[in-house]
Amino acid sequence: MKQLTAQWDNVHVHSWNNLIVEYARKIGAGVLIRGVRNLADFSYEFDLAMMNRGLHPGIETIFLSTDPEYFVLRSSAIKELASFGGDVSSMVPEPVAKLLTGKYASRIISTQNEKV
Image (cartoon, rainbow, N blue to C red; front, side, top):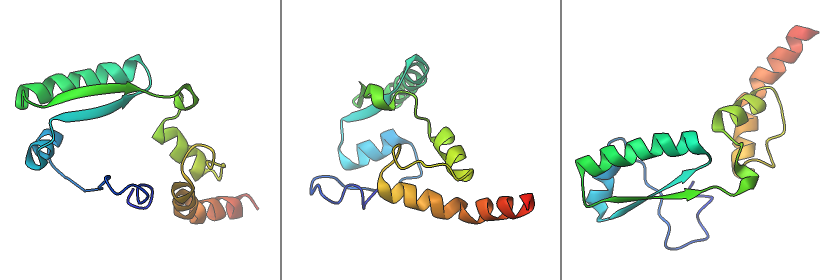
């Protein structure tokens, strides 16, 4: 993520292993922006937003819908495609495609060797 956002001076990438509203409160953020692709995403994200509002009423959630080009993309489907050696370069940024290819390269080679 740091590599993908390096061109913007006002974007910072941080890891956090607790509630997102706790992080927002810690850094003084008052808004969470969540992306949604479809009604199922919205339903899930809406439930989270209501829970977050219950935990910290001062933190709002804004939902942004995806570009139709990415409507059907799911990370699990992309990972599965990559695990079988499929080309994911049109679905993810170049550094991510390279990492996925590297991650699954040994699995692909061993699977190909089993077929021989």
